[in-house]
Length: 293
Image 1 (cartoon, one colour):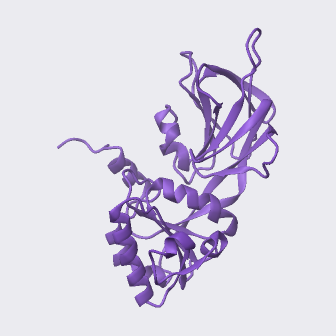
Image 2 (cartoon, one colour):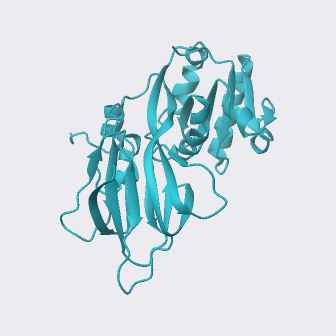
Image 3 (cartoon, one colour):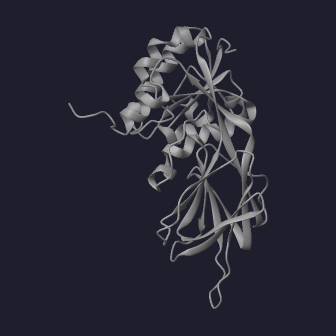
């Protein structure tokens, strides 16, 4: 059951004047309602109403408010999910599938939000672990959208072998492979020809990037499956060195011969929803699916 919010963490990308203006408006309105505002030390310099602290201090508030686009929300989701903290994305970007609430909608609904009159949407995440990874790395990479396996330098094709639960599925001659969640089905995976998946459906999708065959197709697998991706060694060729990239933001380089294991993460992203558009409404609007009139 959603709970009232008395402490809110703020995360914003301050590169645009519009973001700074909206941030000041939210800070003023929330502080006026007696809400404790939290921000990291860099952001707190622009928000005098906020208490400054480290990342954990911000992420363990009752909720985190992100001001920016989907990229801003993705970065916060990977950090907040282990704490179970819900995230509300205010859309100041260009596409907004995740951070889809415009500032005017959120401001108009602040009293409902603070009173706990909102819904929580839970989204499955991925955990990508690198076998044979470089020293100095610990724990899996978390991803809300996708884990992308490719070479560390895109100079040539790579032959990637994909196994699901220990069974060989395919070896793709391609630029890389995307393993996506339903949330990520409307992101990079969609651009690469993957299916659109209702986020209420639990599954993993495997999508080759620019495969050099006519028969390669995306594959949808059970959410409890383990996907393993590794480079195939080719006679007379140097061994390909792979990297795995989480949500296009965090990457990890493998040692030669290493493979990536991708599975459903134990934690989940919790998104705050109230009012606004539903998933199919967002599809229709964002992808311009309305019939011409």
